[in-house]
Length: 309
Image (tube, rainbow, N blue to C red):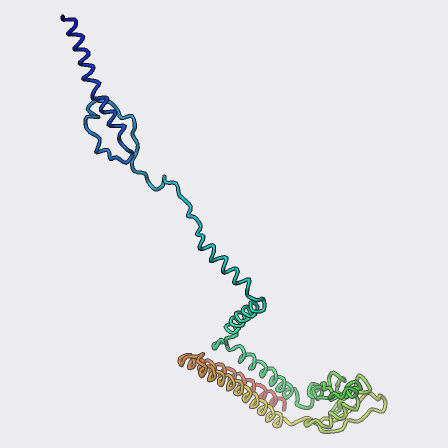
């Protein structure tokens, strides 16, 4: 009977040892991937066997496959409607819209810069050039120099102008003839063409500075001679002062014109009150600088004339 008892004991031991294992495996296989690890019973680990399926339950976003958002059919329909409306607009209307936009941009670009005084500077420079030439002639002797004689305006009547009924053209005498001293007070005017001789005669007679009729040369029909009396130094000095006074008046006129423009901008709302005062001070400063230059030039020319006697 002992051998049978031993065999029964072995069978009971196998049965008692295998039962928990079957229960544990069945319990593991019934777990779902979302079942927390805390729900697993301690009996599983007590058996000393490892779980056949272990997987990390939480996944970081870096390991998640991104999905593209599907295009909205509604958005596509709106785009098609906009394109259709654009195609339905006539070309003339579309071009007018573009022109309106361009015109608006042009108006913004044409807005004047109140602090830009380049136009005033250019006007002052033109006045400086004109009156400096006049003072140069007076300094070199007034009427008694080739530059003064060559600057006489001459009106030339061409045949083409007469046929068309157009007015005569005006040229400085230096472009129609050469002026050279003959010695003493006599000067020679040699015309380039015979047709220019009579217009030159008339121009010299009409001139306020000379007011005389040149004499024809017996040897050369293209040459005219005239006598010019030198001016006295005090007379030249007075004329120089008169020229400088006209120069000052021109500068004041240009500054006044710009000041009126500032008032217009202020009335149109393009200038603030503080900016208007700043522009006034800036304009006055520019005018004062030009006046100082005129004063220095006047003293220089008058001194040179009086020194020559």
